[in-house]
Image 1 (tube, rainbow over the protein chains, first blue to last red):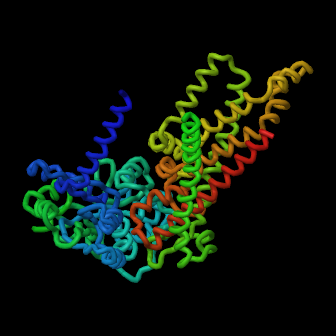
Image 2 (image 1 turned 60 degrees about the vertical axis):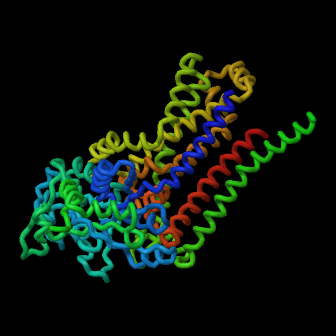
Image 3 (image 1 turned 90 degrees about the horizontal axis):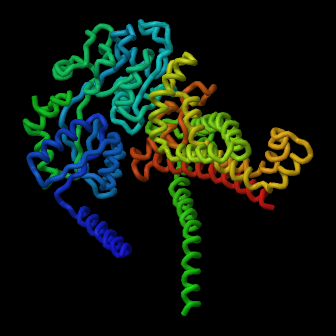
Length: 284
Length: 288
């Protein structure tokens, strides 16, 4: 008797998994950790309005999303950086045509512990801190303590953007790297937690993660410019120097269900969600 | 008819036995196929002894020396902590404690083995890491030492249960003989029991270490993952396993970075294979 039930159970399991694979009402969204809350908020609202459609959102990092798009395991890749030449070439080889859609803007906040007296830094100082040229807070106007550098793992779009635009100051030929002693943490939340409990730490993440337990640093492009706080207004008017576009990538022009979801994300309603999750809408 | 049934069952069991060997061989072949491709772009020497790991830079720098040293340092620390405690615990359970506490202790140790490593890592992150930071006045508590302590907890159950088995399987006559000659209980344990069980205890230690070096989740959460060559146990390190786990999701299939991660897998496979073979040699020595 038991054996027969087991058999039935196995058959049902196989059958349902076969149906799930064929289900055309579901979209897989994968990628940027920065954007995972935004994509989740889109998905929830979208599914409320379109019962029957199913949107699954996972994080993992921009690189993870793009490589999933290339290997065909997701329909939409979120990315907080532009796709690389190398990745496009690889996608073409596999018959995938990455199509780029800009869905928002994000300010990158540099944060320290609230106990740290340092309040403002220039891009140049940030570059020196994160490459390990400045190792003591004394040199940045703070207390005598060793600087603990926190960075995201290499699969993070935030990591890549920060390297290209702060550490290498936008110079594509730049050879500077993160200090080898930088701690690589696996999520923005891990950085937020470590900054909250470590007075000597400095980290960076999308400004949506700022809370009262961390203090955002005011950043200036150079010594002559104004120091600005990372805020939505300062990103829109371009005063805050470290902001970046957020993208979603699809295989070719979006079609069918994917198009429906992308249109939703770009609609007034979708862009209101962008604002509500502490990012900056594109169609301003 | 009956003979036929016996024959079929026998062959089926043989097949199951062979399957595990077959799978290991397949896994190893796959690792080799994917991993060796990296040596088209980096020489073996530069891969093993290169001091920088910047896999996504142009050109990528793929030196895994800091990762190997990170793994070894964390493992060594865990071994130093877990071996004395584990072996002492095994002696206590096998030789000293009365039956009731023995059962309770054994159940406790099995429970310790059942805690998922991600839970241990999380507990370590919120309790051990701030503690290490404050005790040693470090800039950060995410260090090799924190990883070692947490991994010691993971190696303990393996070491205790196998070492206890080894002590238990020594013939009763050894102990009776020693006691009859006027040796004290401690002298019996130290001079007779331990040497007699030494090969089994060594095997226990090796298997415990094998568990530690392959552990991923907990070390990734509490060792800080900075790919530097460690000069003390109080600095952040990056291990081989954490590197694969953290970067495999990102590596584009077929890229240099992807092959390099598989090559790290080969290095890990060779290390744990060597440890297991050593443990096996000790176990066989005991049986002869």
